[in-house]
Image (cartoon, rainbow, N blue to C red; front, side, top):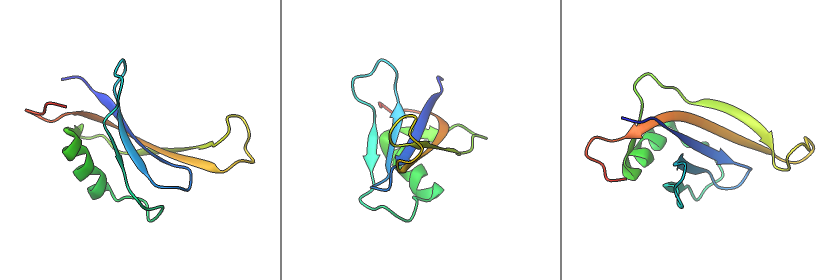
Length: 93
């Protein structure tokens, strides 16, 4: 079963979770209509399941930060979390 990457990001606005599907025209995506608190691991797991994915056993979320404007560290911070995922057994995602 192939491994993909799920990412969750926010630049101070609503949180978005998406599964990176290279070569796809649309990535499976979910948006929380809130800016805080950060979605819990349980919330992320439920959203991934609704999208047809699950976290790869043993994988953990990692966090990085970036600038909203590439190379300009005076712009708002963009937080990005990532984890390895796979399609759920029997999913048609």
